[in-house]
Length: 184
Image (cartoon, rainbow, N blue to C red; front, side, top):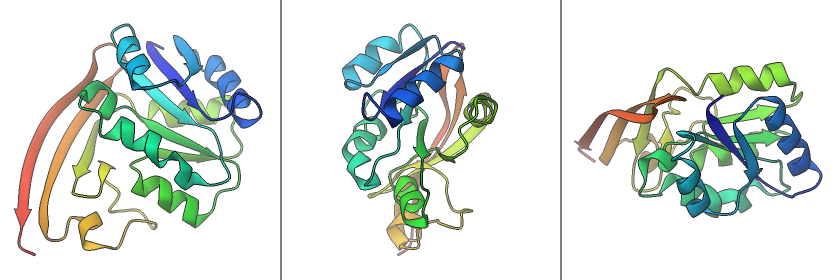
């Protein structure tokens, strides 16, 4: 696959297992994440960079990294897939991932076939993203764990609705970018 995988997490345990899994998925490049500049350089070689997050005891600790990716000024990084691999999923952890703009949360078992199918969902189809004052990420309004606050659900205030396409050959294309202002 003409895509890169960056592993966020410890270099042993869950991070090491995730690195091995990513290599079995035939990513062109698999490496530990060491910053946005590294991903920006790599995106010139492989147009899509997946950010794969290994399970951590406190998922909120991933906020600074997900924010750095989601609010990167470069669209080819900003719209990259963020996927969390949850060892012990909870509604709280999944809700936190959604609030941070993750594209997917994959729970055990982490079989190669299952993970490949979930990764392929991120490619070759139109995806809707929303940006508000406190959120940037995929449209999550149809999820059981969807946020309930007005700022998070786009009820009132200003928001952007973006439609994107991720193509492993050509990269990320923003198909539409619409600014909306709703009465509060």
